[in-house]
Amino acid sequence: MTERPDSSPAGAIAGHAGIEPAYGTPSLAPWLSAQQMQLLGLRGHALLLHGPSGLGQYDLALALARAWLCECPGEQGACGACDSCHAIDVRTHPDLAVLMPETTSLELGWPLDEKVQKELDEKKRKPSRQIRVEAARSVIAFSQLTRSRGSCKVVLVYPAERMNTESANTLLKTLEEPSGEVRFILASEAADQLLPTIRSRCQAHALSWPEPQAALGWLLAAARSEALKPGDAASLQTCLQAAGGRPQDALQWARAGLTPRTWSSLPRSMAAGDWSLLSEWPMPLQLEVMQKLCHDLMAVAGGGAPRFFERDQLPAPPSWRVLARWSRELLQEARSVEHPFQPALSQQTWAARTRERLGSGRGAS
Image 1 (spheres, one colour):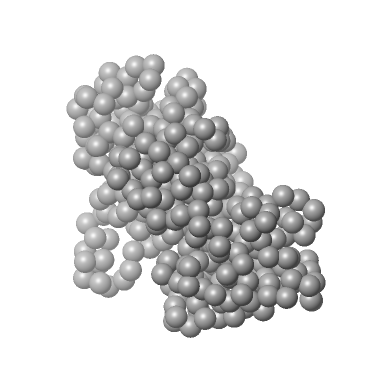
Image 2: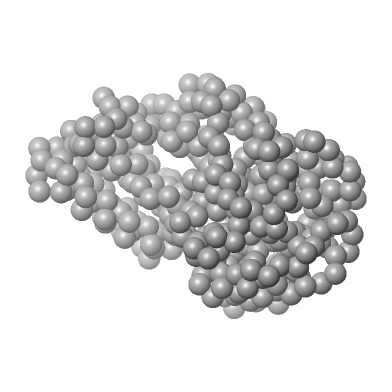
């Protein structure tokens, strides 16, 4: 599996580390709170938060922006009670600009430009999954205005890897020669896809992974908060396993109702061409399961340990050549999985191909 490109199926279950919804001051997960205290001491004009999906890049970025703009910040970050914090809660702070794909802005409750919103309302086009150059230019114009309050202005870019070459180059010019009162915070789940010149202009911080018990404790609290079923420790531990230990993604698996029985049965059912256990899941999620199964079989075939499934849950791996070809096919499928032409036909094709690739388990090439 690759680390979440724009078309990665992981996008279908992308969540955020705060348990509370998009609006309102969120409570940071404990592993993010510790990192926030560390990062508040930095004085650079541009910060890049990076790491795999599911660790809380967006939540940490917003918490830092909130603290930088807060009227009464403390050692723990923003106060959560001043006018500045409230303005961020309701998405109206005049000194905060967010640079996001239109799909992400809609998901997280950030208002779109009036012209863009009108185009979408009139169904002239679909929301963009990329950060458009027009949005980047608007942010640059924002950065050149005088601040309205406080000591700085903040530009939050998420997911930063969604900038295309044109929008990235537009932002780069300002990163190279920033105004003294503007701070940039970029959050990325695939920093390797950013232009090297963008990365070189930022102080980079790799997000820390939580300890397993801390991740499970947070997940249990989140499940209780949302009244998820099943929300028991065994089921949530399975969700963490399915997410590769990433708490945000594990929460989305929990929201999908994943159970230990379903997860443990998937590998052999899929190898037999039986798609009944996952046929009702979104297509990107189905593709992600195939990618994870392929990953674990390649690990076992190479003498390593599986990451997402238990060893005794896996069918016998085919030859490395078969697995490598299957991996390439899955990467190709990921490019169009968000907009499948005929989902039912794709599902049938995936089931047949998975059975063909894994059914024998005798090293066929």
